[in-house]
Image 1 (cartoon, rainbow over the protein chains, first blue to last red):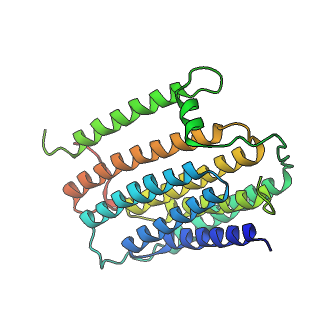
Image 2: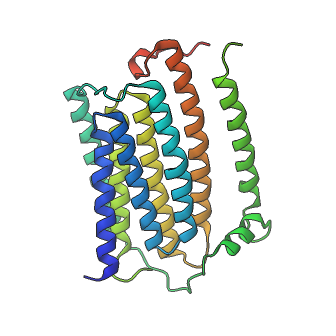
Length: 168
Length: 105
């Protein structure tokens, strides 16, 4: 077994175990820390794919931003020692049946589909290339989604301030 | 593509992660844990985008830009959702889904 494969199995095992723990843990702060582990292991997968910039974004935005925000809101809204009640058995059965059936169908169709790995030369992904394409308006340019995202972020900023404001 | 690892391995991992997220979405009662399940779902989709980009279209960057946009939207969504949760906590003193049936201001 090569080193690549070993690393892949380690990271994917980490992802699977901790994502299941995230949705089953009965202490909410622990669930948040498990989620952090899942996100870090995902950034490891991105490093394995040689997308260093995406891995850096994953660490800074997800692990650094969203998880901190979630932990902050947990501290504001619930007691640390509080344990959730066990969910109703019918709920658990229905949800696991949905999950099992869905993943079975998806994995079956993934295994059936013939993926043809491309033989074209790999583009060297560096920050300069990403920045040039993100701001270009020509062929393979992504200037429009970039601008739309900036408007979305502005709207999110304003609406978060208005929602969190006290009184009218 | 990467030595020794077929594309299906990545897709199976992200599929299982996606459905674990859906299970959590259905089982949980607390709104913050539901938000965490949504983050799991978005994350598994991001893995799919990057893997397809790497294996099937290695001379383009489309998957990378999709991931950038999805991450930005996830951040915006998390911030607004948490602002809403804190507001609900002020009104109802807990944030379980059963107790919040109206959102009148």
